[in-house]
Every structure is written in structure tokens, then in C-alpha cells.
Length: 362
Image (tube, rainbow, N blue to C red; front, side, top):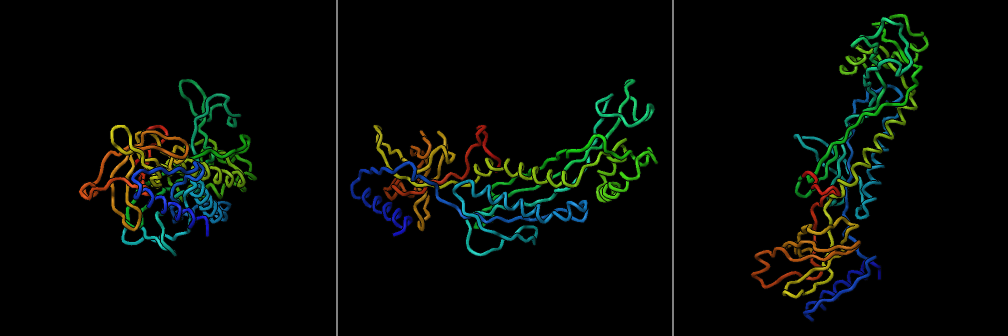
């Protein structure tokens, strides 16, 4: 007999014993306590304007997208209660549709909109960077010499959505974006060709000007920034590629906690204990390591295929892998039937507070 079948048979027998004896007492090793795994479909949509990327980023863009897909898959598997399968996303009638073999409990959809190179302007006063312009060039502000410099940067942005495909409902969504300056050589730059024609070595113009002009044509905002700057610092292609990888990886990692708090968590009631006031306390196979905390409220449902709501619990105490909860609300139909909580009832937490104590956005 497989471990899965043996565990199910053990739980079923325990439930029958509970109904016959009236007193329920089930002890389980804490190490066996695990939430029910979900099957998550991972979809990724590439919305980057690839044609506007510099050649070195354009040729590697496919690898960038696949690396993002791999990192998201690792993130979901790292939640320790998710099986991950691939999904395809198509857009029609003003909404996304998801396709793939087999059924899934949830879909995580990532829409990548930017993974490109931009420039950020910065005002440099005095000797903060080696001066390249003779006195009289640059600007004057309150009697101080200054220059406006454009620094190379990588911009990334994506939106992530957690979707219940059965109800066609977005449970949670978030947007992540950042712009990070790329490592550059402060001695290697192009002087604004409009302001200072003929002052940049031809070799630097030959190696870097074409990419800058392509960026200016594709991005009006970048064109305005570069036009007002005195110097355009340049970065090496390898530095750009490394920056894209690092920025996307950091953005994915920043999602872990928030996604975990919004991904429904499901366990079972393992034991019922009558307290001194005649009320039942339910012991659960979920604990703090799964995201439970005192005062958290949980929905209670009859085991499938019944799919009947029983009521609501409120957690009163937790340890690492188990928790104790009190009955806060009993469904009217369950009360009329003279029933209450039962061992093996499902307990579900649709979302949990973030560690800061604030609930995440719906």
C-alpha cells in the first residue's frame, strides 16, 4: 500500500472511531502535518517591445524570459505546498484565457512589460565626478558649477495575477517595477553631440552612438533626458545583461511573501477537544510555519465531494506545525441538522496577514 493510501485509510478509520465513541482523540506526529497541496498553472506573457532593445539585449531577450519563468516556478515550488504545471495565456474579448492539459486549482500569470535599457539624469556639482568640460560649460546655479549627466540604467516591470480559473476571478494582483543604474566607467562617456560637437573621441562615438540614437528614436522620454544632459555615460553589454538578470531575480523574490499570504491554505481538523464551557476546540494540522497566527479566522467545509460550508473558526494558539481554534460561527443548515464540527473537516484560509500585520490587497 502506498504512503498516500495508507495515510488516507488511517484518517478515514480515525473519523469512524470519532463518530462511534463521541470522544475524539487523535495524535499525529508534528512532522507529518502538511497543508493540502495545490496544483498551480504558471503562465507568462511577454509584452516587451523587443525591436526597441539594444542588439545585445534583443538577442538575449528570449533567455531573459525563460529565466523569469524558471525563477517564478522555483518560487512557487518553494512554497512547499504547490505542484506547478505550464499554462498558455491568450487575450481576446478584453480578457486573458488560459489553456493547458489537466485541471489546476489556481493560475499564476506574469505579464512582463519592460526589460530594457534607459537613462536617468543626475545633477553633478563640483568635483563629485571627474570634470570633462572646461570652465564655462555646463550650468550655473547659485554661483556653483554643475553638470547634468545621464547614467545608464535597466528598467524592468511586470504584473502578476493569482487567478481562480473555476470562478474566473482574480484573487490578487500586484505590479513590480524598478530602475537600477548599471555599473559604468566614470572615465568613459560621450559629450552631448548637440551641445558639444566634435569634443568626443571618434572611437567612443563609433562604439556607442548608434545604440543611443536607436534608444532616442524609440523612447521620447529618453530622448528628452539625453538632450538636456551634458554627458552620456555608457555601459558595457555584459553589465547590461547582468543587471537585467539581477533586477528580475530581486523582483521575483520580493513577491514570495505576498503571494504566499494570498494563496489559499488548506488543512484538516485532526482532533476535537471539549473545553470546560461545553464548547469544542479544534486541533488543526497547520501551524505558524504555514502562516497561521492567533486571531486568524478560517472557513470550515465538509470534505469533498460534499462541499458544504460548516462555519468559521478563530485560531487561539499555534505552534510550528499545529494550531488550536475555537468555533466562532456555525452555518444555519448545519445547526438545523444537529451537527457541528467533525474530524477531517477542511479548514481553509483564503488569505493571511502579512508579517507587518497589514492584510494584503484583494
